[in-house]
Amino acid sequence: MKFARILVLATAALTVLPAQWINHPNPATPRTPDGKPNLTAPAPRKDGKPDLAGIWRIARPQTIPPAEASYASLQFWMAPGESISMQPWAEALFKQRYATFGAGRPSERCLPHGIPDAMIVGNFKIVQDPGLFLILYEEFARFRQIFTDGRAYPPDMSPAWFGYSIGRWDGDALVVDSKGFNDLTWLDDAGHPHSEALHTVERFRRRDFGHMEIQLTIDDPKAYTKPWTLTMQFQIMPDTELIEDVCENEKDAQHAILK
Image (tube, rainbow, N blue to C red):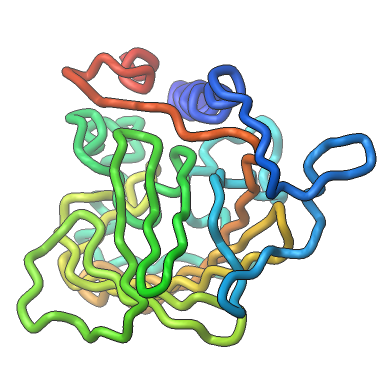
C-alpha cells in the first residue's frame, strides 16, 4: 500500500537521523554495568515531582502486526473494543483523506502538526522548569508551552495551532488541559479532523527512566459524538540531541519521500 510505504519511510527518517548525527553521552543518564543507558532505572525527580525532561519518541503499539504501517491512526492506541465515533461531516472528511493517502495534510505546506500528531510523527524534547514546561518538536522546529504557574485561561484566546495549555500535578502525573485551537490541524496522519471546539486533557506519567505514557482524552462535540480516550507509550532517546529540521520550500526529507 502506498500509504503504508509512506509512513514506514517517514518514520524511519525521523527516528534514525538523530543517532547518525549526534552521540553525546549525558553524565546524568543512569548506566548498566556495561555502560549502556539503564532504561528501567527509577524515573528522575525534580522539586519533589517526576522530571519529564528528555528527548522522546513514540513507541510502536504492540497490537499492530509488523506489516501494518498505518499506526499513525489514533485508533491503534485505544483500548480493545473502543472506537472513534464521528459526526457525519467529520467521518466523510476522514474517509476522503484516508482514501487519498493523506493528501493535503498541513505539513505538505510546511504548516505545523497539531496535538497529538506532533508527538507521533517525530521526536520531541521536554524542558521542565518551575511554572513552565516546553515541548520542542524536532520536525519543523516548533515549540509548545504548558503553563504550570497556576494561571487560568485568558478570557479571549486567539485560535492557535497548539492551543493554550495549562498544567497541574495530580500525584506523579502532569495533567495538561488545552483549549483555544484553530481547526487547521489533523489529530493524526490518518486524517482525523477537529473543530475549534477541541478540548484535550493529557496525563503525562514517566514510568521509569526510559519510558513515559501519555493518556489523552479528546472532547470535540462538533466533530465527535462523544469524548474518547487513548494511551500512547514513548521511549527516551538517551545521549543525543535534537537536530535542526527546517521545512523550507518543501525540500525537507518528509516531502522528498512523499513526492
